[in-house]
Image (cartoon, rainbow, N blue to C red):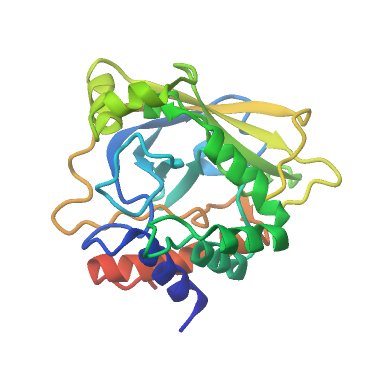
Length: 308
């Protein structure tokens, strides 16, 4: 059995198997909107969606877990996935989560980490001895875990920062190259709620809130890139780049309405961070590279559709 297949199996061992849903980010809301690049973007990359014209977008807000019945107040990462429809008929995807860095560097480490998180059947809680052994062998995972555990329940999907975690090589029309990481920053500001308030809310309060918010007006995020300097490793998603790196706002994502056309009647919507266009190249990041293979396994199991 391949490593991507083992990864999906290990995730199902934690979350259970839920017919027709993603292995992770199973619970979410699909929306429609536009992405418009800022003038500062075009000098950085010749990518079609960074030239300034509004680009149609499908946007999905989600919880990180694989159980669609989990309460929205659960300790969990959240996701923002964006599919952009380019003029030549191609598509490119931007995939971000609320973690500023990832847990592990390799697919094998991710598999080991996921297996270590499997709850003990007697207690229903993770086996702390297994987790402790993993963290002792992989100290790079600790900052991401500590960050995830320290975050309050979100007030809204619209009031979270989302990070791409992977680095991409942006190539300008002049041929100049630079490594970047991107984030989406909410124009509504970041906000959380207390555990007590979260416990009183509906199990689906994030889903309900974003629907109501969008009905009253668009939700907007600035897309910001951080530009690497010497010594910043583009291949290691566990290592954040220093805060003093140059940051440039390169565009605005505007979420305008709910999208009732997608993810129904057999439509299979997949957001793949390796789906890039001319002017953007992938790093050697092993987590980035394994994602489309794991998605292919998950897609086939949930829908029966094989991905080439």
